[in-house]
Length: 275
Image 1 (cartoon, helix red, strand yellow):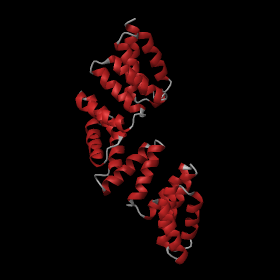
Image 2: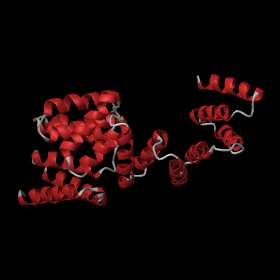
Image 3: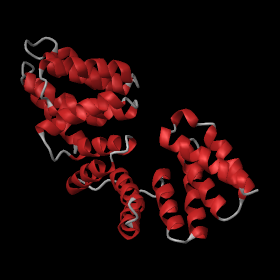
C-alpha cells in the first residue's frame, strides 16, 4: 500500500511540485518505507516553503532515527514541540524515545502532557503505569495499566498489570493476564519471569523453574529474573544454587531498585542462616 501511495504522490508532484501538502504526504510514505534518500529529498523540497518549520523538524528527526541517532532525533522533536506544545504526534515520538533511552523524568513529563490532551491515551497510560510500579505506587499503577489495556492490548502492559495484580495475591486474574501476554509474544523474558513468579506462589515449583529459566535464556542481563529464580531455589532448599543466582543478580545491582536490593540481601541472609 505504501509503495502504491508513493507512485501516486510522485505523479501528482510531477504535475504540481509547489504543493507543500503533497511533499509532506510523500515524506510520510518515505518514513514508513524507511527510504532515507527519498525522505531527504522531501525535506529539501519542504525547506523551500515558508511556514513549514514543524514539519521539517519532525522529518529531520525521522532521518536521524534512520541513522540510529537518537540524541539528534530527540533534539529535533523538542524543536518541533516548541512550535506546537500540544502536538500529540511529536509528544508520542518523544515518549517512545524516553522509553528507549530510559529517561524516566522526561517520560513522566511527556506522558502527563499526552494524558492531559487525551486521558485515555494507551501508550501514555502504560508508561505512567510502569513508572508508578517502579516507584511503588501500585494502586495508581493498576489504574493506569487497566486504562491502557482498555484501548489497546499489548504484551508489555499485560505483563506489568499481571505483576501488580499478583502482588496483591489475585493470582487467578494475574495468570489469565500473563498467559494472554505470552500468547501475543512468547519471546518476552519479563513475561516468562512474571509467569514463573505466579507459578511459584501458587505451589507449582517445577513449572515455575521452567518458566524462569526460559526468562533467563531470553534476557540474561535482567538481575530481577535471577532474584526470582534464587527465591524459588531457596524455597526448594537448593541453597548453593540460590547463592550462585544471587551472585549473578548482584552483578547488575546498579539496575535494581532499593526494594530489590533489600530483597536480595534478605535472601542471601536466609540462605546463609539455613546452611
